[in-house]
Image (cartoon, rainbow, N blue to C red; front, side, top):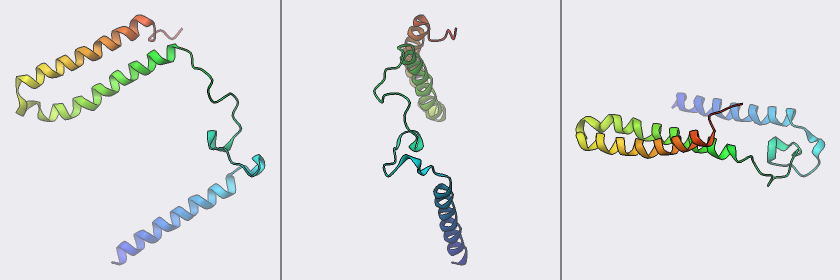
Length: 113
């Protein structure tokens, strides 16, 4: 019981110290309205400004590798129990992701110059 109370006391003290540090370091020059964007700083561009189209291809590449990792780890745990069907399904899944990576490569998202 003493350990739980001491842990709660440490958590409470840590929360108060983070809140107090934020109160000391924040910039009060922006006035009464605090902006949530960029930690309260004034934005330098419009909120609906457009991104260059090449960043969409980079996003697609990131999602392809991200989805691969999300599904490969649980698959690796159960592949021995599932048998050859699981291997075929995973190669099908990787084939679909490879189509996305090939598209991104063709669009030039992997060229950084």
